Length: 160
Image (cartoon, rainbow, N blue to C red; front, side, top):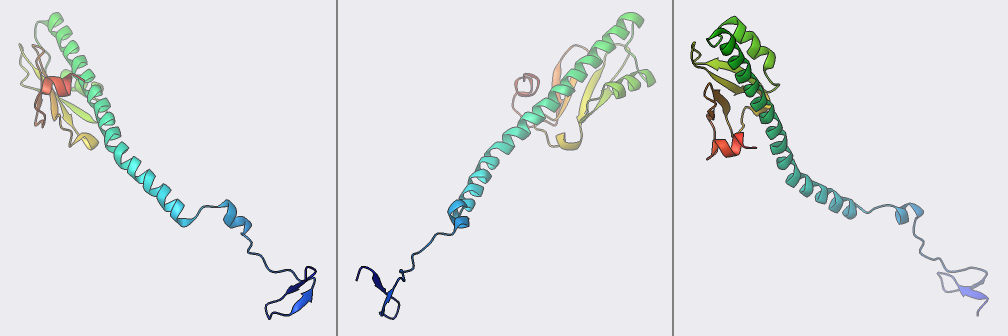
Protein backbone atom coordinates (compact mmCIF):
# COMPACT_ATOMS: atom_id res chain seq x y z
CA UNK A 1 0.00 0.00 0.00
CA UNK A 2 2.99 2.29 0.02
CA UNK A 3 2.87 2.89 -3.77
CA UNK A 4 -0.90 3.20 -3.80
CA UNK A 5 -2.91 5.87 -2.03
CA UNK A 6 -6.63 6.25 -1.46
CA UNK A 7 -8.48 9.06 -3.18
CA UNK A 8 -11.43 10.98 -1.73
CA UNK A 9 -13.84 8.13 -2.45
CA UNK A 10 -11.57 5.70 -0.65
CA UNK A 11 -10.42 3.86 -3.79
CA UNK A 12 -6.75 2.99 -4.10
CA UNK A 13 -5.16 4.62 -7.09
CA UNK A 14 -1.55 4.40 -8.14
CA UNK A 15 0.51 7.62 -8.27
CA UNK A 16 -2.06 9.98 -6.71
CA UNK A 17 -0.83 11.81 -3.71
CA UNK A 18 -3.06 13.33 -1.07
CA UNK A 19 -3.61 17.11 -1.36
CA UNK A 20 -1.63 19.16 1.08
CA UNK A 21 -2.66 22.51 2.49
CA UNK A 22 -0.46 25.10 0.88
CA UNK A 23 0.14 28.64 2.16
CA UNK A 24 -0.28 31.23 -0.54
CA UNK A 25 3.00 33.00 -1.31
CA UNK A 26 1.29 36.38 -0.94
CA UNK A 27 -0.26 35.57 2.42
CA UNK A 28 2.99 34.21 3.78
CA UNK A 29 4.81 37.48 3.12
CA UNK A 30 2.09 40.05 3.97
CA UNK A 31 0.40 41.37 7.07
CA UNK A 32 -2.97 40.42 8.39
CA UNK A 33 -5.68 43.00 8.92
CA UNK A 34 -5.33 42.68 12.69
CA UNK A 35 -1.59 43.37 12.51
CA UNK A 36 -2.22 46.49 10.42
CA UNK A 37 -4.93 47.71 12.79
CA UNK A 38 -2.63 47.25 15.79
CA UNK A 39 0.14 49.20 14.02
CA UNK A 40 -2.25 52.04 13.11
CA UNK A 41 -3.56 52.16 16.68
CA UNK A 42 -0.02 52.41 18.07
CA UNK A 43 0.82 55.26 15.69
CA UNK A 44 -2.39 57.06 16.69
CA UNK A 45 -1.55 56.79 20.39
CA UNK A 46 1.97 58.12 19.81
CA UNK A 47 0.66 60.99 17.68
CA UNK A 48 -1.95 61.88 20.31
CA UNK A 49 0.82 62.19 22.87
CA UNK A 50 3.30 64.05 20.64
CA UNK A 51 1.15 66.66 18.87
CA UNK A 52 0.24 68.78 21.93
CA UNK A 53 3.89 68.92 22.97
CA UNK A 54 4.89 69.96 19.47
CA UNK A 55 2.27 72.72 19.41
CA UNK A 56 3.56 74.10 22.73
CA UNK A 57 7.10 74.02 21.34
CA UNK A 58 6.02 75.96 18.24
CA UNK A 59 4.07 78.50 20.34
CA UNK A 60 7.14 79.04 22.53
CA UNK A 61 9.15 79.77 19.38
CA UNK A 62 6.62 82.33 18.14
CA UNK A 63 6.54 83.90 21.63
CA UNK A 64 10.35 84.16 21.55
CA UNK A 65 10.11 86.06 18.26
CA UNK A 66 7.62 88.48 19.83
CA UNK A 67 9.85 89.02 22.87
CA UNK A 68 12.84 89.71 20.64
CA UNK A 69 10.80 92.21 18.62
CA UNK A 70 9.66 93.98 21.80
CA UNK A 71 13.24 94.27 22.99
CA UNK A 72 14.29 95.64 19.58
CA UNK A 73 11.53 98.25 19.75
CA UNK A 74 12.66 99.24 23.24
CA UNK A 75 16.24 99.59 22.03
CA UNK A 76 15.14 101.75 19.09
CA UNK A 77 12.97 103.91 21.35
CA UNK A 78 15.83 104.43 23.82
CA UNK A 79 18.23 105.38 21.02
CA UNK A 80 15.71 107.90 19.69
CA UNK A 81 15.17 109.27 23.22
CA UNK A 82 18.92 109.64 23.72
CA UNK A 83 19.30 111.47 20.39
CA UNK A 84 16.20 113.70 20.61
CA UNK A 85 15.34 113.90 24.31
CA UNK A 86 11.81 112.48 23.72
CA UNK A 87 10.36 109.13 22.75
CA UNK A 88 9.17 109.08 19.12
CA UNK A 89 5.47 109.05 18.32
CA UNK A 90 3.38 109.07 15.17
CA UNK A 91 4.43 107.90 11.74
CA UNK A 92 8.09 107.25 12.55
CA UNK A 93 7.18 104.99 15.45
CA UNK A 94 4.46 103.24 13.42
CA UNK A 95 6.83 102.53 10.54
CA UNK A 96 9.36 101.06 12.95
CA UNK A 97 6.67 98.87 14.60
CA UNK A 98 5.50 97.58 11.23
CA UNK A 99 9.03 96.74 10.09
CA UNK A 100 9.92 94.87 13.29
CA UNK A 101 6.62 92.97 13.74
CA UNK A 102 7.08 89.19 13.95
CA UNK A 103 4.99 86.79 11.87
CA UNK A 104 2.22 85.96 14.37
CA UNK A 105 2.09 89.21 16.38
CA UNK A 106 1.28 92.84 15.66
CA UNK A 107 3.26 95.50 17.52
CA UNK A 108 1.45 98.50 19.00
CA UNK A 109 2.68 101.53 20.89
CA UNK A 110 0.29 102.33 23.75
CA UNK A 111 0.44 105.19 26.26
CA UNK A 112 3.32 106.80 24.41
CA UNK A 113 4.31 110.26 25.61
CA UNK A 114 7.48 112.29 25.39
CA UNK A 115 8.74 110.66 28.59
CA UNK A 116 7.25 107.14 28.60
CA UNK A 117 5.88 104.35 26.41
CA UNK A 118 4.40 100.87 26.53
CA UNK A 119 4.85 98.60 23.54
CA UNK A 120 2.52 95.60 23.13
CA UNK A 121 2.85 92.47 21.00
CA UNK A 122 -0.77 91.61 20.11
CA UNK A 123 -1.46 87.99 19.21
CA UNK A 124 -2.87 87.07 15.82
CA UNK A 125 -3.33 83.96 13.69
CA UNK A 126 -2.40 80.69 15.40
CA UNK A 127 -1.23 82.52 18.53
CA UNK A 128 -4.70 83.95 19.17
CA UNK A 129 -5.38 81.46 21.98
CA UNK A 130 -1.91 81.59 23.56
CA UNK A 131 -1.95 81.32 27.36
CA UNK A 132 0.54 84.18 27.75
CA UNK A 133 -1.77 86.73 26.14
CA UNK A 134 -0.41 89.94 24.63
CA UNK A 135 3.15 90.61 25.79
CA UNK A 136 4.00 94.12 27.04
CA UNK A 137 7.18 96.07 27.71
CA UNK A 138 7.41 99.55 29.28
CA UNK A 139 10.04 102.28 29.10
CA UNK A 140 11.31 101.19 32.53
CA UNK A 141 11.83 97.62 31.32
CA UNK A 142 8.82 96.13 33.12
CA UNK A 143 7.78 92.98 31.28
CA UNK A 144 4.18 91.86 31.48
CA UNK A 145 1.19 90.50 29.62
CA UNK A 146 -2.42 91.44 29.03
CA UNK A 147 -5.25 88.86 28.95
CA UNK A 148 -2.99 86.03 30.10
CA UNK A 149 -4.01 82.70 31.65
CA UNK A 150 -0.87 81.90 33.63
CA UNK A 151 -0.04 82.48 37.28
CA UNK A 152 3.45 83.93 36.93
CA UNK A 153 3.90 85.95 33.73
CA UNK A 154 7.56 86.71 34.35
CA UNK A 155 8.46 83.05 34.77
CA UNK A 156 6.03 81.33 32.41
CA UNK A 157 5.96 83.80 29.53
CA UNK A 158 9.07 85.96 29.67
CA UNK A 159 11.37 83.45 31.40
CA UNK A 160 11.46 80.80 28.69
